[in-house]
Length: 543
Image 1 (tube, rainbow, N blue to C red):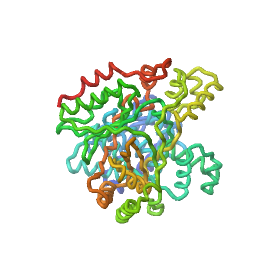
Image 2 (image 1 turned 90 degrees about the vertical axis):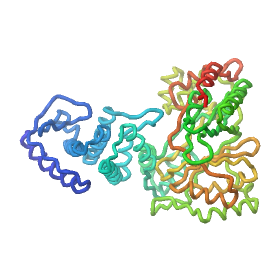
Image 3 (image 1 turned 30 degrees about the horizontal axis):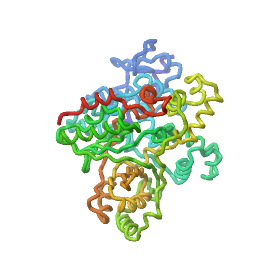
Image 4 (image 1 turned 120 degrees about the vertical axis):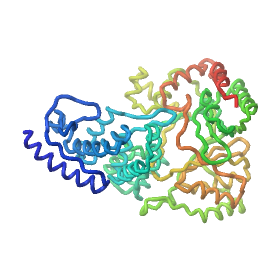
């Protein structure tokens, strides 16, 4: 039996050798001269490995559970990259990913499952979490071997230039490459996506009718888009309905200081992003309990910042909205083509002719619910936003189905929780923020911005406005030129793609404990997190 395997492996090795040498210019790797069966297993070497010119095949490979062709391709690439002296993590990821290209489609999920159980993720909350299996499976599904080839060529070039990446640098680099990876979508895809963004509850039959396809096609396409997180279904808590005041905090910090240090320990923090280019250094989203004590602490925070030479602006948010527009996406070229040269005159016309009040963005008012919330309601919110099914919710909460459905429907009716879809990997690589303190200009800019790919509107009580924009590459320059036609003092800020998240950011395991400790069920009001506030103030840098 092993003799037959040896003949098969020799031929397969030659095919892999020709492919790798031709595409990547790597030195050839000699074929193993001996082969042995083994019952031993090694982490990361599922199916087998090569050691001292001997190929060891495990029982799972000999049974066909792990295709031998994937093992051979992986070990060939591993040996070839070892000669390039790659960092271990890079070597493992690119070897395992290359093996996947040779695995038959019926066995591919098994391959990725074995890989994921070996190394599920890398990184931390500060550098970002990188899931190698999710990333390379996304690349393989939507670009074949093209994107893999570009990445490997990039790393080989770095080696030739003497650039050596640490594991942390590799994670950051891959997170950025993954963020910028763009899938090719067609007109039918956008019809499907557009309808789901408008109505997340649309049925498969409604979507099939909308896209002029079958229910079967819609189901498969949706599964693929969601599996690879291109179309992400989220359950979100609308915090203003819980009686939380939302604020946008902008900080301009002294040189050499880390902007995150001023907010990382704040019990109000939902999320924060560094500003890569712009007037400020940090944009943070705060959720502040609607009571006198918490509001006073927020003012004290500003005083502390002022005493430490940190300039700050805090904007209350009264209503929120968002809008997608696909008018400027070419489904033939598979890219965004924004006519920035026309946007300037268009914005100027909206302002000059006072058209802003005719093109008002759809927003949701930040008003508190009148429903009385008990501990079960908070537990339902905590678990529901994690994406659990009704069956899982019943098991976790220990309540009957009828009671759970009734409570959940009440929470939805009050606007406390909603389902929505988000889009990723469609070429919107730049995140910008516009701070528009004047209603006079904000109304016109908000009306015009509805023609951009994605805009989030954050409106204040006195007409001040902040916009979060997701744009394709070149968006910062295009936006700056467009705004100059109206008001040169408004300068777009480019935000870091990696967010710092706080306790209020959901879903996470500590959410319920945090909320339950602050919510007074009897009074139906929020308490101020006094101890956490004192710890936060004590951690703020001296400047």
